[in-house]
Image 1 (cartoon, helix red, strand yellow):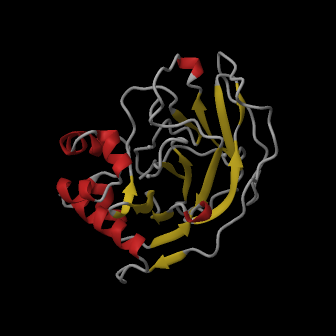
Image 2 (cartoon, rainbow, N blue to C red):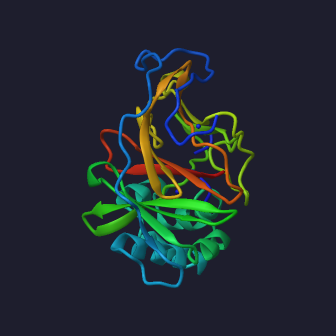
Image 3 (cartoon, rainbow, N blue to C red):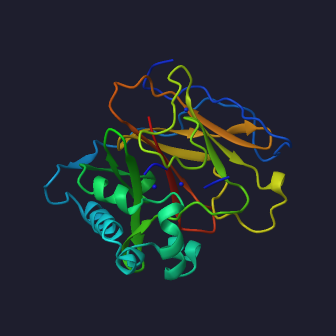
Length: 272
């Protein structure tokens, strides 16, 4: 999920070494740094050209979702969310009042992205399909998966408060980049995202964000090898080397499962 999603990765297309992030306490559940690459790229992504019919049911539901957001049809957008995403908001009225500013796609962004080519890639063991859209200045991606009610979109936003949140370090976009063109990306360093440890924040409830061990990585909708976390003081850090930009916008998306007790997935996208 344009730009990217929760408040508070020199120049090759391979997963790089993982580095440690800063923190104030140690997390015994996280091991020392290990080599990246715990997965392999997916098959060639499916692309739907602009003005063409969606190439798949997953792309069709994303198109419907973007249409609803762009047209300010909150009820239609709400009905397309997964049960887990709806649970995050609690009610349709909360979704209506907060979704435009919580890191999910805004109406203006949806109006642009619904006209961009959609690219689909299958997640691990078919758990979800990631549908991505990228322009020179905007990028976003949506996790689509089967639920008891059929295909739905996992698109929960950034919680205003809470524990175990994540933050993009490179590019320095924070939890979500909400500016057209993206935050500055240092091409001499790996792209990097960090998660705060629940233990460091005296968390008593399960995190709505999760505290993943593995991230699945997609660049403009094409899957790269997955990456594993390394100990990062009071949390975890994930990095991946993706090389220099050609000048056009590129969307880098990471996807992770919220937790063992949840069927929900989360994603975060930054523009490079």
